[in-house]
Length: 224
Length: 213
Image (cartoon, rainbow over the protein chains, first blue to last red):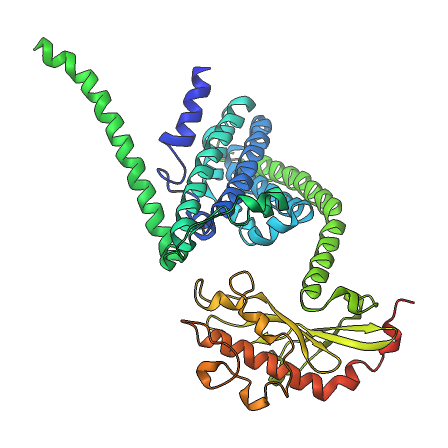
């Protein structure tokens, strides 16, 4: 149970793929113009991550070490193709928005890293957890960055929610009384926003480490 | 063979086996989804066609009425341009052109231009563009209602000479901060009207055959 928690914390926070490992930035920077786009790509990436980890974990006994990377790429590419086809058929509106970026999930190194470091060595349960935590960590960054850029860039929040959850959800859109600062919606805004998020993450991590160090350091000081 | 050397044959066999399974799975999901994907595309196409032409104004199968025409000068691209022809009781009602405005700020702008048989614009929509977010993208109905300014326009209203944005001395609204994008769209709509005027007879030569009945 403790290991499960450790894996979740590790993927979602301590070793967050987007903020710490800096993997998968190509789709991340390109798609995060709105919260909903970020959420949708996050869901698709998580689905591919978990499916890849399950598949790789299942065939890990039959993996030939020399051919493992080829195998991972093959598995990832097939799964992404399947997600692409199925989402085109059954989530057509969403696919219209994400169409270009679903194939890009193949290039997300976070998935390959998970397959190599976790799924090919661990049991299926751990592999699912690893995929899930990495996916959640990645999605959290996508959603936050999307929200920041949408809010600052066009003064709205949750626009296009109906593409994800049906026409009833359109009412959830928030409109702020300002037009937005254009640069946030443009590619530079993606870099500024990501840099900001990484800085915030580093700030909190640094502070946590400090308090831990102090706790360890305190007894020494009193004893000396 | 040296024991430390990687063995090629097992590696090839395992990759081949996995590739075979993967091919079956991908083929399977293609079979499962391709009809639905095609139906989705048709429906979306019909939806976008109905944006520029009232669905009650015609009675033929619009998606089946498509022909391709080529006119690099007036339709904006050397590629074939799709034209959908709407008829009612075998009589021409309107044509919808998937024209291209070649000189957008960031490349070509894809348009759908509906023109009724009496030579007035029913409506215009932008279907694909890469104009600057916040500036040129106001040509998109999702961003502003600028594009609705074409509804009801024709080559005589406004006069041909006034088919330009106000910034250029014409009749159509300008867009603050963007000159290139609206200029490209206005020119494309005007040229498509000119094309339709010249080719109306040929476009509807088999109008009677288009009816469902």
